[in-house]
Image 1 (tube, one colour):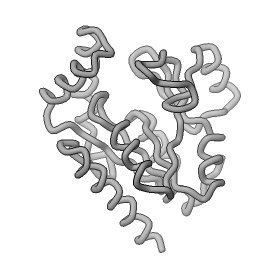
Image 2 (cartoon, rainbow, N blue to C red; image 1 turned 180 degrees about the vertical axis):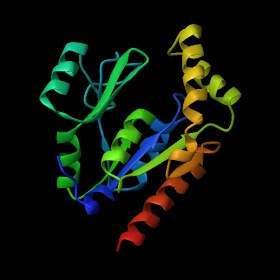
Image 3 (cartoon, rainbow, N blue to C red; image 1 turned 120 degrees about the vertical axis):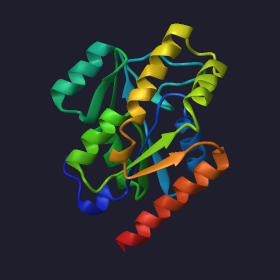
Length: 194
């Protein structure tokens, strides 16, 4: 799948350590921007809470995911904590075909894969105000055991070391401020391209 420079400029990747609030920021962006559409990733993890297949993620088993890799179905994919996550090429084509910009929620490995392959995409990074606040958020959502939270905290520390490799970093201290900041940045990138 080849993407033109113009198409690449319409793709925004939002990466963040787990629990930083990227899903909430993306949900709010979708509420305030009709020109943006969420790229639904595919994963081998099980749904959390009220997540539904085809809404937050496409949930598949590991065998189906690996078969998709062999067929070349993915724009990017990566293993994260013994699970796989990826973006199907067909999902990006669907959104661009509607004349909308794409917002993606993918991990830093996938973000770097896409940025290397398609330099015109925008990789954005959302960070928590502090690691202590991140731990509080992970505990508060009550979806994981303490040892899983510890693993996520270790991963978050490692991920935050790569901030400089992102085009822009946003600190998610205040949700509405973060949403408006990301939205303004999207507008800025589109004005620069015209």
